[in-house]
Amino acid sequence: EAGSLVADAHALTVLGGVIGSLVGIVFVGLAGKAKEDELPEEEKKKELEKRRKAIEEETKAEKIMAEWRYRIGLDDYTTYQNALLDIEEKGYEKQKNLYEEGTVEWREMENKRLEVLEKKHGQEQEKSLKELDAEEKKEIAATEEKYLKMETTTEEKEEELNKIKLKYLKKRQETAERYGDKEKAADFLAQYQEESDKQLKEKREKFMQEWQELTEKYVTETEKETMTAELAAAEKLAN
Image 1: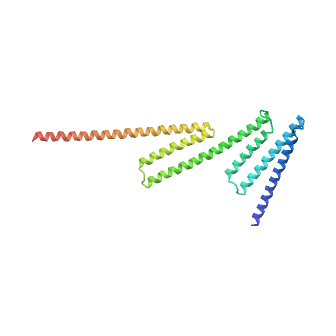
Image 2: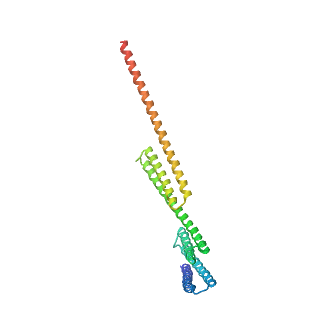
Image 3: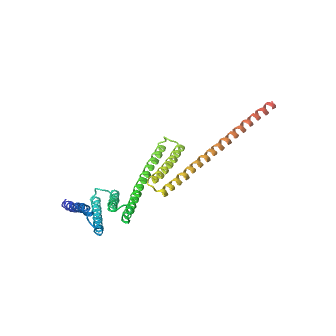
C-alpha cells in the first residue's frame, strides 16, 4: 500500500508538471500572437519560430500525458497509439496555421500532418479488417454448429459457407475503399471475383454430374423396361 501511495504521488507530480507546462505554453502563445503584428519582418520570423517551438513543447507534454495514462493502466496500447497520432496531427495543424497558406513552411507542416493522417487511416483500417475477421469466424462457427446439430444438410452448410466467404471479401474491399487504400481494395476485389468464379464453376460441374447421373439412370431403367417387354412378348409368342 505504501508503494502504491508513492507511485500515485510520483504520477501526480509528473501530471502536475505536464499541466503546468501546458499552461505556460498557452500564455507564451497568446503573448506572441498579441505582439506579432508590431514586429519588423526579421523579428516576426524569430517570433514565429518561438511560437513553433512552444507548440512542439506542448506536443511533447501531451505525449507524456498520454504515456502516463497508458503506464498507469487508464488506456490500453491501441488507445495510447491512437492518442499519439492524434496529438501529432493536432501539433502539425497548429504549426501550419502559424504561416500563410502556400508558403514553404506551411507546405512542410501540411505534408507532415498528411503523413500522420495516413498512418491513422492505416491503423483504423487494420482495426476494421480485424473486426471483419472476427465477425466472419463467428458466422462460420454458427454455421458449423447448426450442421453438427443436424439442423442443416451438408449441401446447405457448404452453400452457407460459400455465401459467408463472398460476403466478407466484399466487405473487406468496401473497407479498403472507404480508407482510400486502392491497392488493397483491388486485391480484395480480385479475390472476390476469383472466389465467385470458382463457386460458379463448382455449381456448373455439380449440375452436369447430377444431369449425367439422372440420364444414365433413365437410360438404364428404359433398357430394363424394354427388355422386360421384349421377354414378355417372346413368352407370349412361345405359348
